[in-house]
Length: 313
Length: 178
Ligand code: SF4
Ligand code: SF4
Image (cartoon, rainbow over all chains, first blue to last red):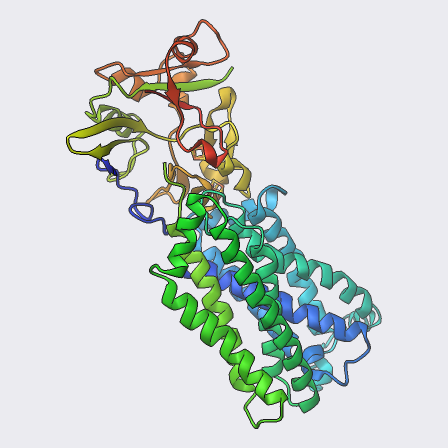
């Protein structure tokens, strides 16, 4: 039997008895980052394949969300900083070892690119927009001409962004629930899946909805597979890892994990999408909404639960 | 040069003088602390064993807090002392998350992240850290481990010791004599 107590009355607010430095804004930031990456990857692929007319939601409508999502995400991140006025210090150096640093730089590059992306076609959707200055019109046609180049640039950048949302957490070996190599690919998959769901939500074309439903089914299956893989990895790990995963399996977060994430966020939308493809009359909106909510819940779950886990000594 | 601290758990009586000395010396915000004392009791009555430990930042040789800091605010100073430059810190909390010993906190008024500095301002003047200098049982030792004639090097050569959570891979540099 081992008992441990602090006799000096240690009191570090937000650390004792439980670390709570990263709260909801960070979960939201990770979710929106993944969503933005997912949407832009699909949009770029559609453009590279010259299928813009067949997939109007993926190519044009949904990417409008991206700059908005990124800006809200960045504001959420800044909101969570405790020394906010110094946020510019992020851009005085690049530190490859620090995911927070290169993530901030990748976002700095993707944000203007995503705005350019939308800028290049927004007049096709809203013809009444008037740029006023001829230079802006010239700039618009310049971007249009180089759109494929932009797409080729965006795909790798967005893959990095999607993986970054996981690596930001997995880089900490002090929090065993975060410290696994699957989290990067897992959050990227989840980001792609929420991206596909958003495209379904904004699509009016039956053909497009169906194709993205199929893509989403595949992504959800991969995501479930990766989650099982992660859980199994924990059970094969050290005591700290086994303790960490038990918080999801039979601890404070198991309801959220099994019922909300696995059930409502993954399995139910998966079944609904499969039934729909089999010809049963179903709404495609509901599973898409569930996937989006599930994606956010997943980030909240990992951020909150991960901070409760630690290496015992 | 590599500063380390050696703490004799067999001499410590758990008076918490080190905690108070630090709070006074470093103007630690009210209700916070940079060092603390833990009491660990193991075994079943009547066969119990107790260990008292004065803990603080371990000034790790492989500090994850420095690695994950996006701005370089957390850095390794002269002698291996890990410190934070307040006006480079954005308060992102990455270093707090990355420390296996929970040795850091966000300063409640200033916003930047703060922790034990090994009293670098005293060490530069040739003094010992405040906690070491006030300990009534003299159970703490501070010095350069690379100097074979230093007190710390000699103690570590003679006595049995441990570090906390070596499996975290941070190479902590506070040694506990056991
Ligand atoms: S104990 Fe924590 S804060 Fe101190 S150097 Fe090690 S990881 Fe960094
Ligand atoms: S809170 Fe400050 S010291 Fe810690 S990682 Fe962020 S910028 Fe660096």
